Image 1 (tube, rainbow, N blue to C red):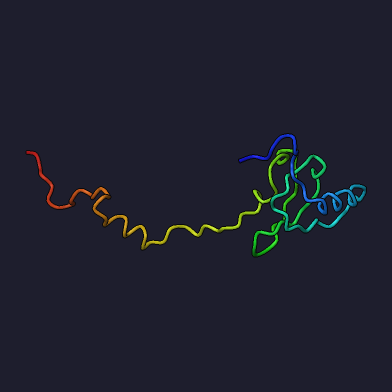
Image 2: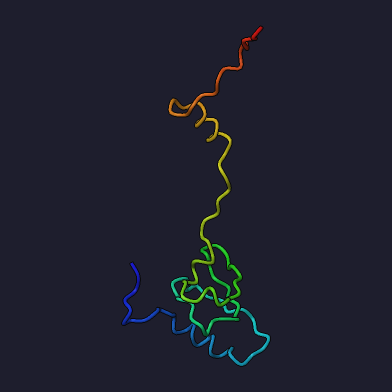
Length: 110
């Protein structure tokens, strides 16, 4: 469910203060934040953030296409390591999986 329009987008007040403080700086350090629920506003464009994903801080550079999204959308919390070969083998031997045609004797036409 999205946030009510009359309330406006949520941005952590301390995050807004940090962005306003760095507005005049040319070379600035990335802003470290734990606020994954904050919405990206146009004031954030061009700034770098370090967004916490529960284990480490993910570096993100904000672009215009990101405005309106949440900071947490750009720092995934789960890593997908792929399916294990055991899972593939179990799926191949299950009764629901289609079986391969037998490679036995081939009929020769004469």
